[in-house]
View 1 (tube, rainbow, N blue to C red):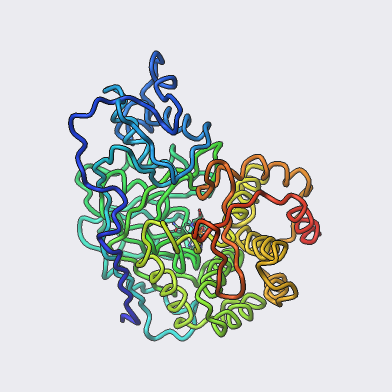
View 2 (cartoon, rainbow, N blue to C red):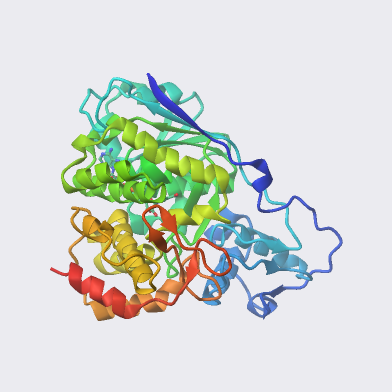
Length: 470
Ligand SMILES: NC(=O)c1ccc[n+]([C@@H]2O[C@H](COP(=O)([O-])OP(=O)(O)OC[C@H]3O[C@@H](n4cnc5c(N)ncnc54)[C@H](O)[C@@H]3O)[C@@H](O)[C@H]2O)c1
């Protein structure tokens, strides 16, 4: 039974890459005043597997070059007069560098922008993770000929033995955050035959980001069946796909690829470990904050202190609606969609550090986001943008979502300070932050952007780390 439907309709006019064919140009390669030819000409660039995946020799080489130069996402790459052999490489790299930079002259960009239908199933359920027998309704939305990629843990715990699954082509993937890389993208792409026209992802945000990215490059339609709270509330809505690009950090290479459908069946959450529930709750709280919905916030704070058993499906629906509304208005993040990165500037840097240091025992995405939200509010308070003494920070600190950290705060601070300008929102190597001005409201910088340029405040960070230390 369908419980509710949301339509996410990005305006077609929001296409970021105008469809103007640039014919007859005398190409030269000048990129943000850097002579890219120095990077390419005279080099014997080997064809890598990732080049093959992106469709052009030299694309990975160019990506590395652009990252090493810390080029930001907002400055177009001027490729007037680029020598012929490198045109394809630059186009391929520009399409995925920090989820896409514009080219001058403008390039034809095939971007899959389409309406997403978000379907909520489970009308009989009261609570988000009621333990109802596992007769999943989502199978009704899978079509013959679909290629299904399934998260290994969800598969083992829930659908391995279901006869319904056997009739579809499916591929089971065991993937950790640190494996969300270009190599995994290549490997997955190799498993997908040319005849596949639609990929269904059954899993969490890590798998969804990876499969979505592969689908974007292969120009295949995507359908998400999220199985974690985070992927239901956030990552399977909005069309962002991507991979971590080492050593430059999280989600640095990617593409916008809007799914045709996202099918949310809350009973998938019944087997999700508590750590992952908490991780998802962090993004839910972020949405409640952004939407200025105090009762939703209070309810989630209460749940975050105890357990998900209290979460109503209608609350989950509201949280998804917040994201769908913002994405509909600003699908490619030229404006208010940046607010969804609240807590993520520091959060991503911390997560990258934790993955490097702790491997499988790393902090969850949501734990890092919560720390990032607290840091952003404190930074706003320090800049007198947010009222000191507001109970919001204490409310967050009292939840079970905040990790207790055993970091050497100075060492982590140094690491983050060195790496944070790789953040996708960074511009000209300066870091951009989403800074709230009060509950449900955000400060706009002098350039009227929703992100504000500010250097990383090591002292503020170290104090917070020490406060969260055990
Ligand atoms: N694309 C976006 O807009 C967006 C937004 C937010 C976060 N993200 C990304 O999402 C990722 C985090 O996603 P996540 O939190 O879903 O993590 P995840 O995909 O790693 O899933 C968490 C764990 O839960 C297991 N699992 C999944 N479903 C299960 C179930 N029902 N029962 C038991 N185990 C289950 C998985 O195997 C995994 O071990 C990060 O990489 C983050 O960057 C993307």
